[in-house]
Image 1 (cartoon, rainbow, N blue to C red):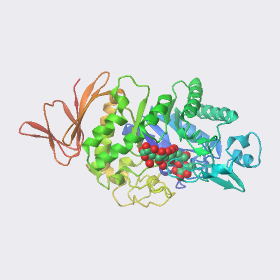
Image 2 (cartoon, rainbow, N blue to C red):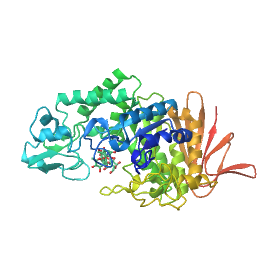
Image 3 (cartoon, helix red, strand yellow):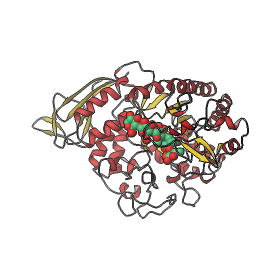
Image 4 (cartoon, rainbow, N blue to C red):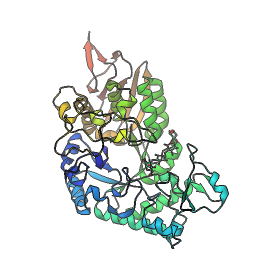
Length: 478
Ligand code: ACG
């Protein structure tokens, strides 16, 4: 299980209200106790932006997070607890304040070739693949390709010297002690056709690029972990995941949430068959990075319209599946937040350690718009209450921790009986039936033994076992 960590909002180690390496290091025990095995660290490279995806120096950390030494200490402490740490590396673009870009604007070589300058007025008509936004920005009279907006001009990988430069970047961060990378925007390396002057993914060129980058990393650190961020349909996700070893399963994330939110067991069955189709085969070339939410999405409780039972059901379905699960910081508290493309702040609020919003390590760099003090949401408050959201969420994590064999298990069967969805999962040393009740009412389970609750309730009535509404249970058969 991986924890997606937004450092700025996590834990403040030096009292400036901004989360940092020193603060996060102090909370590693907390993460290890949750049963986390790895941390996906959202971008921490030197960047002017709050999200960190527009880098101004690929060889230094953002000073607000501490020094390189602080980072090394953080990594060493994580490793002592057997936690892997992967770095989110945005290699598709830079900040317009990056020295490379400033030199490129000046016409200096090789930097001029490292960005895409307009060569044909017709290219200005190009529109972004998924939402029709314009993709060219005028910087003091020069048009540059900027897929993600004016704050992040795209790097142009037509230039071979840039490939070399990026290999040096990878070497550097591996030498600092990272266990691998979450490669941002992996399908965007080549996404503009110079021939046609339009936005068009060139998947085979992207794949060739990533093959070379990952091979480079493996030549330094053979066990490097790579996770690809390819937000697309299942067959495209597949294509890239095979290179990286782990690929985020975006289609599954959406379908899983929708099926639980709309209480639609049929949709759940259908989406597991399609979005996890590889998990039905015993030989797979990669693992699915299964998740429900991330920093680009609304938080789970908000998606479920505040219904905690549904959020926990979605989580227990997720953690019963083969693959490598990821979850976003604060989801264990049931933090709220709705994603908005133009004001994407709500889903990255400070982690609420203390009920009154103050205390050692509490970050305060931004206002709490959704997750208020004195709302009972804080870790402090929830730890003091039996049956809190945190406690129930933690129990689901505990289930996964005790059933880590599920990661490499094969799905051997999937069926539905009214609101009940039954999964047959077979691992090397164990196998199980897993039951999820997507309905409000309890359902009888026939011929079961050795049942354990994952989430919700289990009961017995006149000799029959019942699974409560919005509940999940596992029956280990071997
Ligand atoms: C990553 C990061 C994100 C970051 C950037 C840029 C990239 O996680 O935080 O932005 O460094 C696209 C890209 C992703 C990108 C997201 C935000 N995420 O592909 O790499 O945008 C469609 C498109 C997707 C698109 C998605 C969301 O196909 O390409 O993702 O919409 O907009 C079905 C379809 C599927 C479709 C979905 C949703 O599932 O199958 O194709 O996806 O529906 O409609 C950060 C900041 C930005 C800043 C930037 C520089 O957040 O504000 O501008 O950095």
